[in-house]
Length: 236
Image 1 (cartoon, rainbow, N blue to C red):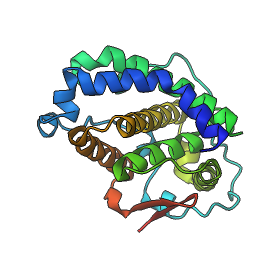
Image 2 (cartoon, one colour; image 1 turned 45 degrees about the vertical axis):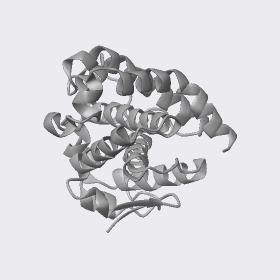
Image 3 (spheres, rainbow, N blue to C red; image 1 turned 180 degrees about the vertical axis):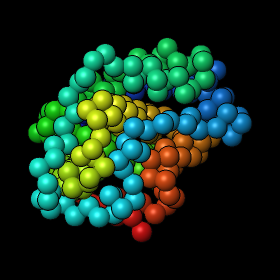
Image 4 (cartoon, one colour; image 1 turned 60 degrees about the vertical axis):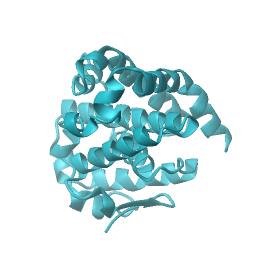
């Protein structure tokens, strides 16, 4: 494990602890990671990225230079309610702690992105984090190497920058998408690492379903068609 991944682990250590204690030991465990998960269901998130992201945008990603001058950066615009909005999709007893966790997740994501030399407020990097976080949770596998994550971000940046729908999206839509993707991606990565550290077979099964559903809410197709390997995304 290289230095950046070690930095990553140190950065999210507090979040891992909070998440693990909350998901495994709290009453909400029975609602969305435990036996009654199927009754509660996966939280349905209205991802802002759905306004500009679809199968063709992702499937046509080449990793080459974008054909347009569209920026994939989404600077902050006004006061953010994204963390609270995401937490509101979970059981009532979970919302206060999850709001804090999602807020910390964005901060941690931005610190990791900076250490990887990625631009600040980059929707492409946030999208990569979302896809990777949910993919490793669904597949119960390890984080990709730093260079692979950077390569995936580059591929997604080219795809987004070439998308007419992304170009037409408002600054607030892009910012909301950035925050949602970064928060949920880091949250899923953190929880996956926590479950790897302290195995819980029942929770793992339901968490994998959660990750699969997250991907399908965004991709609008089966997550089984998604493959992330060697820094490249493929949809079959």
